[in-house]
Structures are given as structure tokens and as C-alpha cells.
Length: 78
Image 1 (cartoon, rainbow, N blue to C red):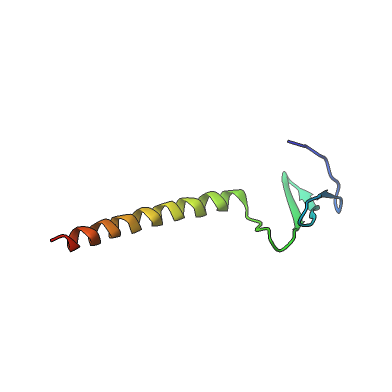
Image 2 (cartoon, rainbow, N blue to C red):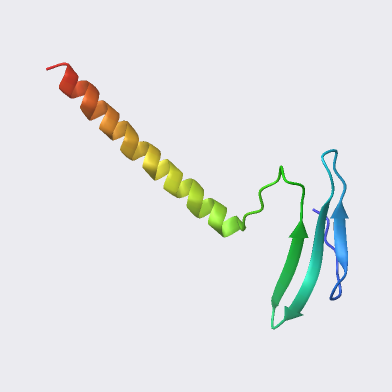
């Protein structure tokens, strides 16, 4: 992991084959930082805690769907 210090309006650029990702410090106060991120269209930017929540919801949905499929298949064998 690379750890950097940035001042307001300073940025970081991540060079990539499909384009660059630019990260800027917009504001920092009281232990919180507001950042801006620019990335090529092929990238999805999601907050880490939301990604974990989405993945958990997807797993629960898949389990419910499997239960429905099992019931449907079971009913078809009667």
C-alpha cells in the first residue's frame, strides 16, 4: 500500500492502460476527507461499505432464488 499526504486541491494520478484515474483532496476537516475521483467509463466507483452491503444483498437474493427453484422442481416431480 502506498500512503501519501495531500493538501487541499492536490491530487494523485494512477496511470493505466485504459486511461488514468485521478484522485483529488477536495476538503479535509475534523478527521474526514472529501475526495474527488475521475476515472474512465469502464470503471465503477463504489464506497467500500456499500460494496459489502450490495454483495451481501446479492448473496441473500441468490439464496432465496435457489429456494424457489428447489420448491418449483420439487413440485414438478409430484
